[in-house]
Image (cartoon, rainbow, N blue to C red; front, top):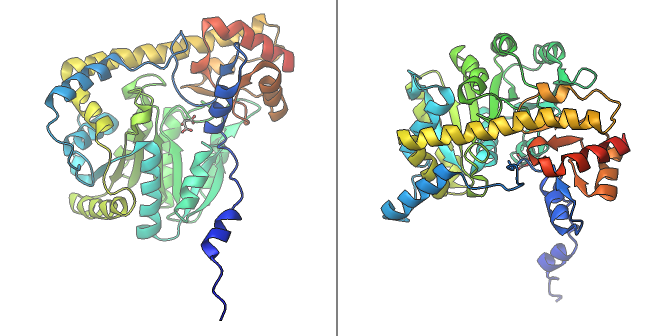
Length: 404
Ligand code: LMR
């Protein structure tokens, strides 16, 4: 009798390496680069004028309070702290959201966690529907939904020749996708293009979605980074007020600067409080077999800030400072490129919203910027404008002009 070979060990040694992540992998390469002039415009992390990603003052104050008052490290409920949940629903859907009982909301580990729970929920409860993603979209979107065993497709979104939203093509495509499919939308500050839908387009989109019973899943990771908290929520609220069933994933990585605390929310809007209760029970079942219950710290910080008028005021001021820095940097970037002699018209950068823009640089130019100038940009040409400072602007613009 022969003993069975130890299959598991052989299987492990046969595994090939995964490619680096197209966004986070660049930051690893950036860190290892010894060039003192290096610039990281890849990952979507806010940087101030000195190139730092500081902890917000409102967060520091909330953490001090938590340190004093926290009395237990026992588990949170599966859906997270209900106070946090209620505050987030008001932030996303509006202070006066009258029928919030129609919304099932859970605290998730970041916006990514919310999207993955959404994916599992859709696959388990709604069946094998397709998930339609904007072309282009955040590179992690396809992987998240495929990991949930959903098939992804794309709809046209961005028109490179005009650097704006290709709304007619988008609408035309969505008007013909199978009924009941899921459509992923970016609530504001489209990642990667920075090109957002106009208000009338959101209203029109609501009709298109309703006509085919499509389910919107709004990825809302940058509330407050485009114009302000209210204006940036206009799209989400338009769909909500149109009475559509929908899912919304929120992230507080950027607007509270809580990246590593992994704090987000999945909200599912249903037609009645009864339906919301059933949905909530299913979301909890998904969470329980995934990460069991959410990590507390980030959510406690957000809940502490949003439950206190003074801290909320401070947060809004700090958020407005971040938003203004990005908007001003867009202007300096356009001006800097002009001064550096770039022949192309980059004025569209000023019209786009949030941290990201498609620069229009191709893969070869992006690669040259990295190899010759230690400037790190995502392969699609997406730049994180918040990585530009007065100190690195000239070097950056000259480098870009030299590869055009
Ligand atoms: C980004 O797009 O850079 C951010 O959302 C960070 C990430 O996780 O990719």
